[in-house]
Image 1 (cartoon, helix red, strand yellow):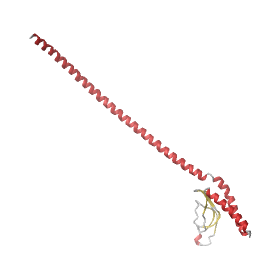
Image 2 (spheres, helix red, strand yellow; image 1 turned 45 degrees about the vertical axis):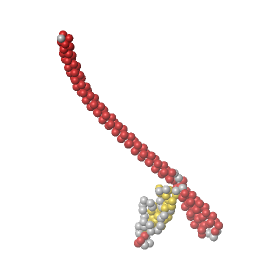
Image 3 (cartoon, helix red, strand yellow; image 1 turned 120 degrees about the vertical axis):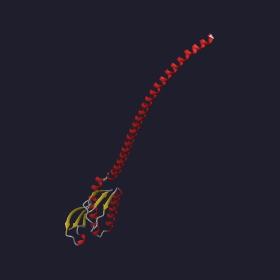
Image 4 (cartoon, rainbow, N blue to C red; image 1 turned 90 degrees about the vertical axis):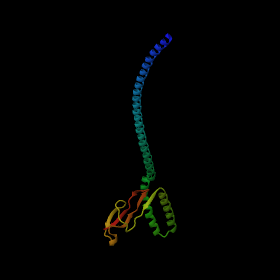
Length: 193
């Protein structure tokens, strides 16, 4: 029996220690769960912060990409315009020569020398074709067209020969030319009043 009493006493000693250990463990679990909840809330706030930062960087990237695309389009458009108008100064300098050539050709047509006329026409056509290949276009102006201050230059007004020509173009004194879509010389016209 003494053995049995001894074992019972040991068990009694063990039980309170186990309860104490369990209580300590349970308190530790409460502390751990409180710590875990804090850690989870910190992780959630950190995740939200990181998501916000990623979204902000993504937005910045998209804006930068859009700006770069706009830059590429703008420089491409400017380059095309530059190529189409690169010869503007040269073309402007050649226009009076083209006008003189046309006047000379009209005078040669009045003469009886057919070979001279054919030679002049050949050179004139070659010169005009070369200019048109480089983007020069003649602006069509006919009698009776409406006058537009945006594309015509009025040099004088005369009484209109008929009521239909009042406020309209009566005569083109000098031809106008475009280089690509840019007017490099406005046609000089006479309008009826």
